Amino acid sequence: MSPDKLVMMANQIGAFFASQGPAGVQGVADHIKSFWDPRMRAGIFDHLDKGGDGLQPIVVQALACLRANQ
Image (tube, rainbow, N blue to C red; front, side):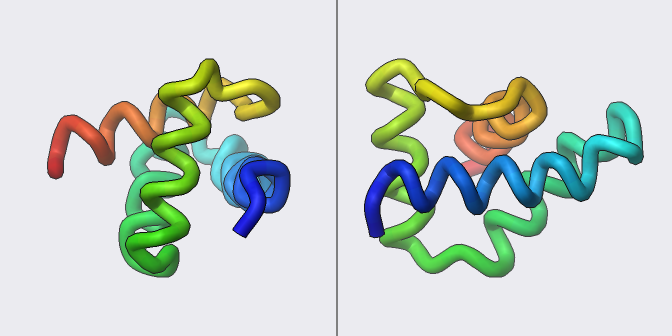
């Protein structure tokens, strides 16, 4: 899946959980962990490692939580 598609999907998830305040970060992380296959997760982490262009802050925070808990 292209990085642009992954960014779009991750940002949509982030927009949904943003209204939950700080708990929203964990919501995004849980959603990506539960519903994204390993290739998608690897793709979004690769994109993040290359600068993460286009990712919303809530998504960046969620990915940091996921990476810390791996």
